[in-house]
Image (tube, rainbow, N blue to C red; front, side):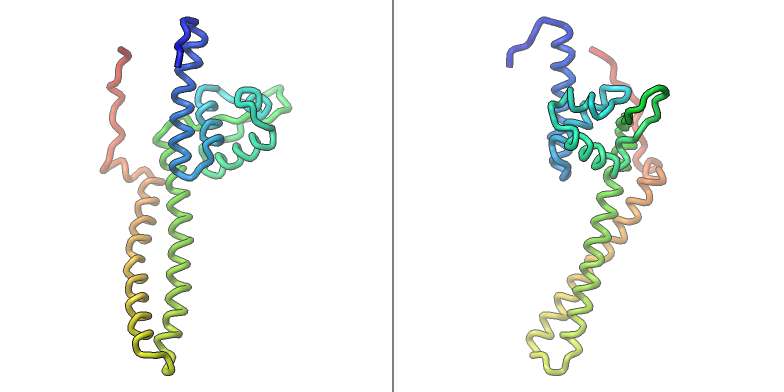
Length: 186
């Protein structure tokens, strides 16, 4: 990639490097890359309207709206009141520790609900198999082993729920404190 000597282009290039990395990272966590690019773009702005987002990212307004809604689900983008404007303004969470807490606790809580519910539903079916006197002994044995295997996963979901609670409450920072920013410019 050819680098420009124009300071304004260099500034945009530096921002684009970070926006691209954020888009790629969010893609790793199951958020569409274009939504990740939207979040990255919003990080560098005080607030943005959907029209401003569309203009910067060259995406349709409905796509921008859907992306903002997705980011709002994780509480990492919020609507901001702007006096004198009839348009909605949105602002990105700029504190990455808050971002982490909001984003991952919501993902983990969803994982807990989906998987713990699946375990309970599967165990109910397995209990029917186990308690049915007409079930073949080999099938009953496998059903019991499968049931125990599933029950053994439940402490993980309990632990993940406690981890989510500790992250949401900030208690986790007693054990893993936020480091001081000792980074200086070069």
